[in-house]
Length: 156
Image (tube, rainbow, N blue to C red):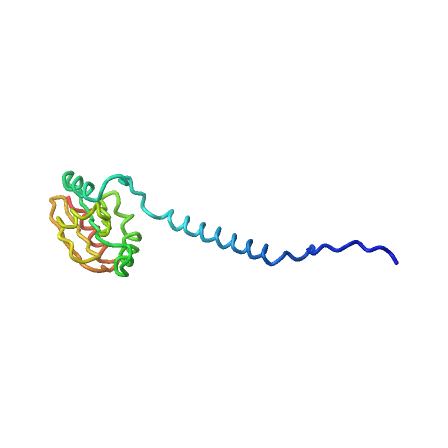
């Protein structure tokens, strides 16, 4: 009888189940990372990362720059909905209207919350060049947000 070659436990066509699971997990992790990276490419880049919201707020008032102060948290449904809307609408106005993004649970923002008398969230305050503000509580419609930002951007 002719000698047969001993067969490997691994056939050329099939990988063991643990290897397949690792490959699938790697594909999922890479896909999720790519999706998050692409999604975050559209987020506005803040040049004032080291400045507190209160310093930004005061600087914009002093410079008489129109300002959109957005008071929110990251864990209330209405706030998350409004954050998504701001991410969608605000970039068109970033050159004309300053955005002061205020997380109400950040302890560094407590003095600004007291000064602005924030009692509920989300709260949006649209401040013109003269320092007069218009307050909206809750979630605004896309149209309302666009109109308020447009009003601030177009004021002389």
